[in-house]
Length: 201
Image (cartoon, rainbow, N blue to C red; front, side):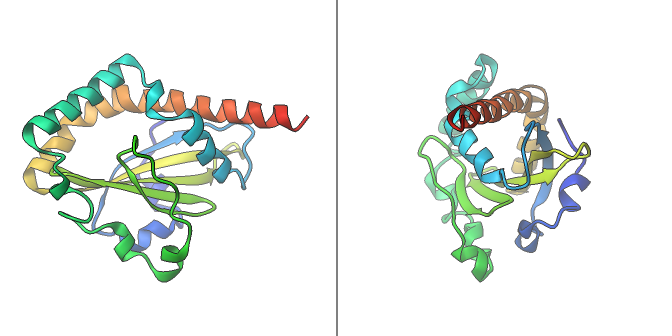
């Protein structure tokens, strides 16, 4: 479910300390029935096991394949435009305690690379010729009392072209990509919970 930006800005996330120059692009919530306050690491494990790119719907797969083809054609994803080249990694901004905290694993199949991973929040980043973007995941108690996963996308556009690019892909994110992501990530939680409950009997 799409959320107002205040659902992110009102939370005491550590990421606020060093992303003041990024704009909040999207905020989204994912239902995790039965989850408790300490289940964020369990949810991250569920995403790694069951929520990856392999289970994308055909429309989403088509959109991403098209995006990578266009990136190849126009050089948007040239390594020189990436993190550590065109832009510095967020890790260079981290206060000492976060820099010493677990970073989280990287996956070659996942273009977003780990910045940090805590008990209730985690961040990953990606940069190319259009944007420097951060995906923030947080663990929040919802209005009904149960805990849920929230995802916020932060963006620093690379000039006018980056702003135009983000505006152009917004309808596809909201109407196709995020609903598909919701299906996959909520299913990942259900599978993990079912597995954990089965092995505890």
